[in-house]
Image (spheres, one colour):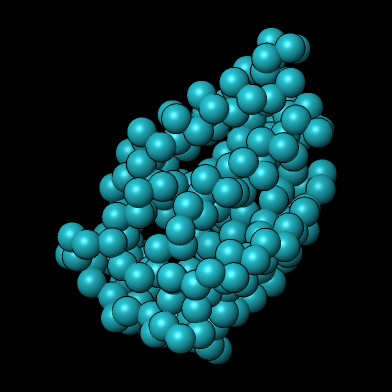
Length: 221
């Protein structure tokens, strides 16, 4: 069995990669350089893919920074201070990012005849992004299976796996520990400094998750 795993180099995608590997999939890792302000996650993704031993690791260049509108890609915008209790969508939301990523993953899957795509999204511990919700994933899976030769002509259904969709991030971390994930290999912070800022949404969610899991984040030591 072949699987495409969307690998950012962050906590979620890394656990997803280890999980797919543990289930016996031939793993093809897919990462994106999409105009983000730093490449620290991508460097982590390269290291993780090599350590796990994937069949192939592709890094795709996209210019999602061409039209701005997101503090992760727009140099004229500052990343908002984190708030784990926020109800609005933060300015770190990259317009339709997961829609674009999954579309590229579907193309890659069709090329290598993979019927499985893994993405580490969650509806429980996240920043309210609309492209991390089950309704979106179900719609994308349906579209992929209506618009690929592999599914339509060859009758080989392509499945989008979201193993963490109903998991808390602390549960993900516990699973990652069981799978042998070295979380010091991962990067979650929205900023690319020497150490995590500890203040952005992503950092706050990660800090809380490690505390809830009764563990110490190796990046915060």
